[in-house]
Amino acid sequence: MAVVYNGSTQAVMMTTPADIEDFARGFTITEGFAEAHEIGDVEIVGQENGIEARIWLPEDRQAALDARRRAQVGPVGCGLCGIDSLAQAAREVRAVPASGLVLAASEIAAALDGLRTRQPLHDETRAVHAAGFYVPGQGIVLAREDVGRHNALDKLAGAMAAAGTDPASGAIVLTSRLSLEMVQKTAMIGAPLMLSVSQPTAHAVRLAEEAGIALVTHNRHGTRIFTHHARIGAAHVL
Image (tube, rainbow, N blue to C red; front, side, top):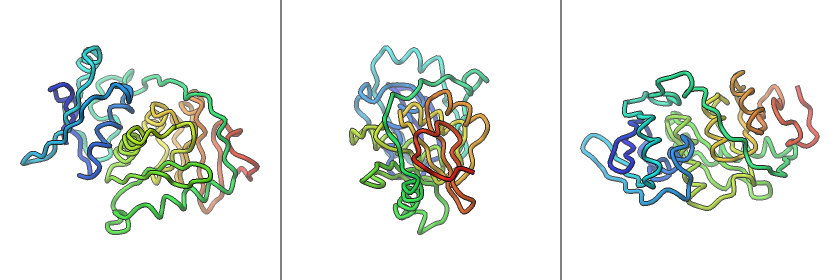
């Protein structure tokens, strides 16, 4: 799939061909190319050998896009493909907006269990990742799947933007590990909490601490809160 801004190809990605408009919007937001309200028309065009997502942005965004040209193929699930410097890979991200969100310890397992019921493609193929958004009292309100874990989160970001979902109202829930790039994308979304069954990397923990994001894992070994413990109510922390 090619992501085309104002007529110029910016990235070529391998992605599951579903929820493509969500992916186009979400990728634009999580990569910092534009804010949700700056995204104009999005046109999805089928080609013989793939798909083009044609996105229109304000002219003042074009210079930044030109400076960070990423017009090259990235393998499935590659979150840093096309980055040509360490500075870009370790880019600073803004802190998430202030939020009073606090999850009860029991909600952590409920959120992860809820995401498992929203994965029809995984149930059929056992070959895709999922990303969901959990809101206390409502459960998983949105979920998206993709063969690439970064793509699943981008699709979720786009779906949240299209639905007008407040990212400060809930938690990002993932089936994949909590890596640096996933924290970067979550910070750009503006969500204050990330949940997963898999452990975070050291870089992810450092960035989450700086960005104000609570990283929490829950699996058969128990619950672990790595950053911003105040976002979780009384819990047994390993």
